[in-house]
Length: 313
Image (cartoon, rainbow, N blue to C red; front, side, top):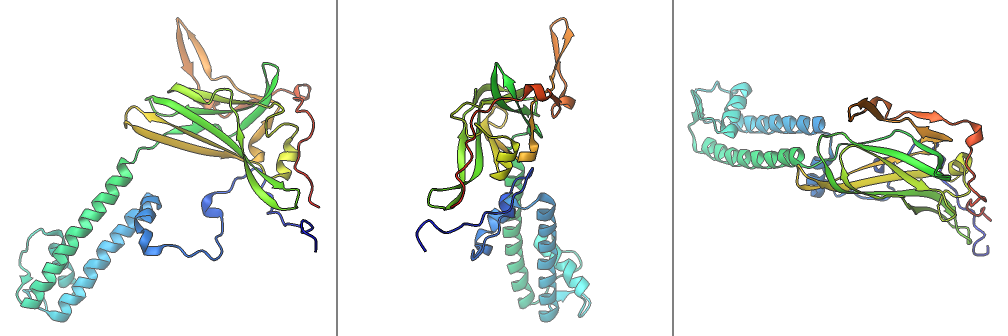
């Protein structure tokens, strides 16, 4: 078979949806497991993290309870009582001090010493993870659920919206947008390729309200000559990423969002957010943030000649 005569199988289309990293299957990949435990604890949902810590706490005390029952040496504890040993273990791990029950043998004192050390390490590690999760700076940025394509100043333009949901300012905010497309090389090799999307304004010196992000569809645009069907045929995904300096956290924050082909509204424009209250007072109506108005068939933008990827050999 000649080079370049192979036919490469494309992945199935997913119109209107985007893939998440956790949706990608990894064949032949061996995870780090316990060696990457901290990363897992930082990325697992908070309810799952709290449940895991509670189960770890109960399981550790239960293990020491069985050890105390096995070796004995707990004064005033009922012989063979797992419940007495369990609550004695909790007192030891929490270092709250002993009441009626206390270690009365050498083996029990050794176990109490080991458990006290384990308790101190567990509390320190748990506190560190909890503080890292709570103190990690995050950006509360809301992206419009749709993107629109219409003419702006006579030029076909792709637009999307972003808004700062907090009452603070994100200084020197930077927005970057790229589109992911299926392509087939001249040799017949299939690939998913990133294309940078040049923005009319990619920098916002003081992002504290809303921001309409615009990309003019010119001959140099990756969208030039393409309509909804062409984007769907190439599994298009539009990814947005915003980063900036949060003046409250005094750290960099970032947020991201992705649009599928079904999230794009053609020949539409966003509904206005600003409301003039009079006397120099303006208001922003966020209930309209995701709304768009259909401009009708007469407003179909001219995208120019088709720039679809070359067909497979």
